[in-house]
Image (cartoon, rainbow, N blue to C red; front, side, top):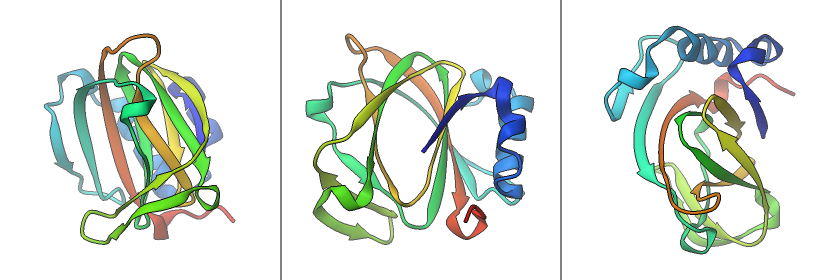
Length: 155
């Protein structure tokens, strides 16, 4: 998992052309005015999902992981804890759903604070628990850019 802010995107442009394009998209679009929902993109990025939700306590959330996509999650407004655990340290609780590209897990992990203006990059090996409240539930607005795992070039 990578965590940073858009002020330092130059550090990550070499990860892959698709990551570079996704970071450019975040820097050059009015994200606050984008409507919630799926946004198809005509580029190397597959699609983006804009979402607004209330954060919840970790006890009400589950660990998740995808196989087909790398997630680039950017917090537009609000603050949340993002849980992270190496996938191999968790126990599957629901089998992988190929149609939804998601599997659910249980176990322990670490949490990092993601305030507005922060992004994280999560690979298929990174189990994560997004949307966890920091002190009390609050509204978070986020965009999740889905990058095909085959476009991820880090070795």
